[in-house]
Image (cartoon, rainbow, N blue to C red; front, side, top):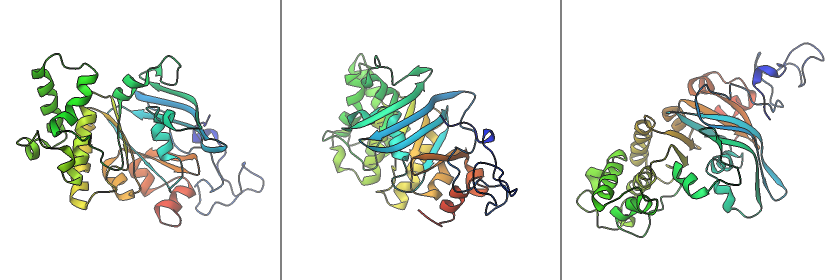
Length: 295
């Protein structure tokens, strides 16, 4: 299990001091070889609490000993080079890795105090509570209405068609899509533009009343105008949900998140308030990535 940064020895210029090489490149910053998580991983009121999470794909150790809290009503951005483990960690949060052959996940992941890794946990209601929005919009080959109604219908959230209509309308409004589609709810969801399809997928996730929304590079396939709409939507949604977003855009992470976590080669290197991470990172690896020295 990772411990807080304060429990590690800081890099020192004194010969033989500390557990990592002396003379950091920037005074007071953790050295590149320091693999313990820098920053406060714990929150007072977490929605989710992860402790000692490890992920293996066959013989590959993809994620090592990650501990991290996801707060209520916050956006947590996860950044890092390709293959660093951020999407792997995201998929742990609603057990999507269960669908990957040869994948083994260990550690403890609590949602409102309940371990989602416990053998008696049903992943179907779990994935309703922890919704997922994928990189590429994936509307069902159904009407716009049926795309949003599908989840509430199978989860029994509506007792009548009137209640179902109310959920659909409310979800589309929360996704800032209602005004654009209200006159064509019977039209195929696949006929919408890319940005509209992604907002439809967000409406579909909202409709099943989640507590947490996971987003895996939700804007990577979108144009700048659609991206701006999604980012505005994320900021509005955090009033009611906890949101975790994986992004390769550091500008996007800086715009939408309150906390940022930086991953590198399967390790959680640094976590902290977004302004601090981008303005004054405490680990040299974080500084290197943000300034474009690698990744």
